[in-house]
Image 1: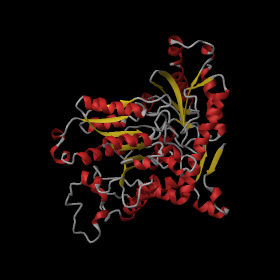
Image 2: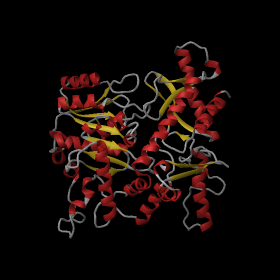
Image 3: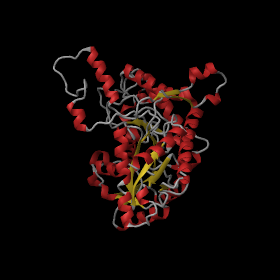
Image 4: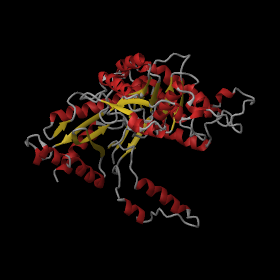
Length: 489
C-alpha cells in the first residue's frame, strides 16, 4: 500500500504540536486506481449489488451502506495524485470538514437572520480577496457564486447595468446592439453568457492571440474599431488570467489602457489563475489586475477548496445590489431589528444560495496565506518538472516550447510508427488519433487520467494540469511511462 502525506506550511511553524493542530494535511492512499471504469449502459443495468433504480419501499441500512461504497467505487477519485484531468482536484481534509459542517448547519445565504456567521465570513473573505487584488478598502463588493461560468455571467450583467441601468426594467429593446470582446482562447462561458443575457453570441468578438495563447492588444483595439464600423456599441472586455488549455495570462495592463481609452468595462477571468495571487513567486503574472472593474476567482481550483467555491468581485460598491435587487417583502424586510445591509441575498440572481464560504474560511485559518502560497508553488514546480522531462525525451513533443506560465503542460506522444515521419497532413491525421486512443485505454485501465483536445490548427494533444499538491515527481514519471506503455500497444 502506498500513501502520501502532504503538509504545505510546516516551514512556517515552530513545533510538531502546532503543525498537527493548524496545518492542513492531505493524506491520499492509493492502493486503488484513479477510476474503475464502466460504460453508461453497464452502470444503468446494474453491477453486483449496485442499482440506480429507486424502490417503493425503503432499503435496509446494509444496502444503503453498500450503495454509498459503490457510488465511490464506480466514481472518479479526483483526490488521487494521478488525477490530472481537470483544473480542480485534490482532497483537502480541512475543506472536507468545512463541507460537513456546512451541510450540518443546512442554512441559506440570503439573510443575516438565518445565516449570521456565514454572512460575516463571506464579507471577511471578499474583503481579503479584494485587498489581495490591490483594491482599496473603500471600494469593492462581491458574492460567492455556483461556479466560474456564473461569476462571468454576473460580470457582464453588472457591466451592462452600469452603462444602461434602464435595461433592468425596460429590457434589451431600448438599448443599442452591444459588442463584447474576449480572446479566442478564453473560456466559452463568455459567449454563453452573452446568449443567456440576450445580447447574442455573434456579438462576442473573439480577439486573436499570440502563439503562447495571450490576447494581442493591437488585435483587441482593431476589433473594437471593427465593431464600431458595424454600428455596434462596445462596452465590455474579458481578459483571461490563466486560460483553460495553455494556462496563458493576457497582458492586463495593456488591455486596461485600451479599456480606459474607449471607456469599456474590463473584467478579468482569473478563475484558474487567481490562485497565483497567493504566491509571492508567481503573483507578478497578474500585474494590472487591480485595474479591472470586476474579477472572477475560483478558490476551488488552484487553492484546492472542495467544489464549489467561486467569487465574483466587483470594484464598484453597491452595483450588484442595484442591478439585482427586487426587495421581496417576505424576505428582505427593512424594519428588522438589525442592520439589514447584511441581508445580502438580493445582490444575487438566486434566492436560495448554498454556503460556499465556510470551507474556504476554515482552510485559510488552517493554512494561512503562506500555506496557500506554498501549495501554489508546489503545483507549478510539478509543471516545470514535467516540462523538463518532456524536453529530454524523444518520444514526446511539447506544444509550446517555452516554460509553462501556469501549471498547464501540453504535449503530444509520438508513437514509434510516426517517429521520423516528416510534418504534413498525413502525419497530422494519424497523430490526431493517438491521444484519444491512449485516453480510452487509460480510462479502461484506470491508472491515471489527463485530458486532451485539439486547438486551432493543432491536432489532438494531451493537456496535463496540476492543482493537487499531493502529486509527486514519481507520479509524473509514472504518467509518462504509462502513456508510453499504452501508446505502444
